[in-house]
Amino acid sequence: MTSVKEFRVDEPATTTDLGRGAFVFTDDYSVFDWGKMPDQIPQKGASLCAMGAFNFQLLEENHIPTHYEGVRVDGSDEVLDLGEALSTGDVPAEMVISLTQVPDLPFENGTYDYESFHDDAGQNYLVPLEVVFRNRVPVGSSLRSRTKPSDHGLKYDEWPVEPVDLDEPIVEFSTKYEEQDRYLDREEADRIAGAADVDQLAELALAVNHIVTDQAAEADLVHEDGKIECLYHEGQVRVADVVGTFDENRFSYDGQQVSKEVVRQYHKHTQPEWVDAVSDAKRRANEENVADWKSLCERSPEPLDDSVVAAVRDLYCAGTNAYVGGDVFDAPPLPEAVDAVRDF
Image (cartoon, rainbow, N blue to C red; front, side, top):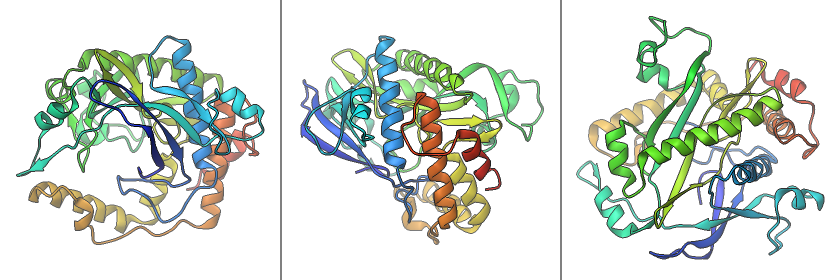
C-alpha cells in the first residue's frame, strides 16, 4: 500500500524473473510526504489510472520499454487496453503491471545501506531513485530553495516571483526509499542506481518528458515538471510506477496549476502551522539521524472543506478529459474547472 494506491501481487518477482501484479488506485491524496491525508478526492484514482494508462500506451507506441500490461474494470480478470476498457462504459482504476523486486533498505547509524539493497536485488530490482525533469521552474518548486538561477544559465540574480521557462530541460536525481527525499549529484545517483546506468535513466526521463510535453500541448496544458521511476531487469531499464499524471507531474493551464500542486498550495495558505511543523520535524530528523520524521511532528493536517474537495475533483476529471482528448468523466470544461480553483 502506498499513500494513494494499493499494490497487489499476483505472481511475485524472483531474483531472475519479473512477476505480475496491479496498482489499484484510490481517491486518497498526499502532500509534503505526509502519506494519506484525512479526506479523499472523488474519482481521483480513476483519473490517475486513465492518464497513466494513456501515457504508458504512448510510450510503448514510441518504443520506450515499460512495465505496463493493461487495465482491468469492475474486478474482471480480463486485461484490456485503455480504449477497450472505456468502451465498456467504466473508467478503470486498476492497472496491471510487471513486477520486480524491492529489497529492504537498512538504516543504521544515520546511514542507508545501499550495498545491502543491491546484494539482495541481483539483476532484477526497482531502481531506488526518482529521476526528475523540469521544463519550467514554477512557484513552489524546490529548485528555487536549493539552487540559484545562475546555476542553470539563467540571467537572474534572484528567482523572480513568476514561473521561469527553461531553454533546455533539467534532469535531477533524488532518493526514493529514504524517509526524506534527498537530491543527489550524478556520482552519488550512479552509486545508488547499482547496475542500472544513470545516463540511460536520464535519457529515458528526457524521452518521457518530450512525449508528455507534446501530448499536454494538444490540450493547451503546459507540462512544467515531473519524474519517472524505473526497474532494472537483466540489463534492460524499463519505465515503472505511473507516468504523467496530475500527481506525478505538474501541469498548468492559462497560468493556473492543474495538478496536486493546487492542494499543496492551498494547505500552505490555510494550514501554515501544520506545514511549518512538517518542515521542523524533517529538520529535526536530519539533525538527530532519525528516519521516521513524522514521529517528531507536533501537528496533524485538518480535512478540506467540501467545496474545495468538489473543485479539486472537477479539476482532476476535467484535466484528464482534456489530456486524453475524450469525455472520460462527467466534468465541466477545463477552463471552467480551472477558474474554480484560482482563488485557492
